[in-house]
Length: 236
Image (cartoon, rainbow, N blue to C red):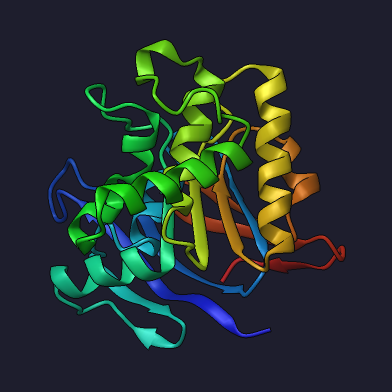
């Protein structure tokens, strides 16, 4: 399998050199392969969300390198990174980040607007995704008329609207009911069958049995790496 993501000594520090210095991500080196399901876990404050923001190019590192499909994107411009995200990466945020003034299909298709795609085409692409995720009868409803699980599925549909190679999800099951959690796992399994790479950060231990490989973070450091084959490696 080809490598889709690699980090080399990746760090993100805040207030560097002061007594308030925070090493949110501290010297992490890891590799993710195509079609892998990856699980980052650790206590609150361990750096999971910060790391997802870095590998998804939403944030820039203090030091180290990020390589996507063997391309070093660390020094890319904001415009170049935005283009890469549109083409290859989908995000599911912990707080959903849905726009309250837009209905479900408009939220899902929102990333297509800068690409100049017509409203009719945006609607059709969003409709297909929402129906696939069991929301065909909710496409015209705004977020406040949707349950937490429904909002999460809208957020996943939005992340998939550009058919990305990599899906990154931060705490995707944290604010939804048990039935919706089962649905989320079904969706992620379907993505694996489509040979997508799915990267999840969560406190939910259920993801460990789902993932091909999992990484334990503590205080910004990668403390352990394990895989579904039973092989474990010391953190680098």
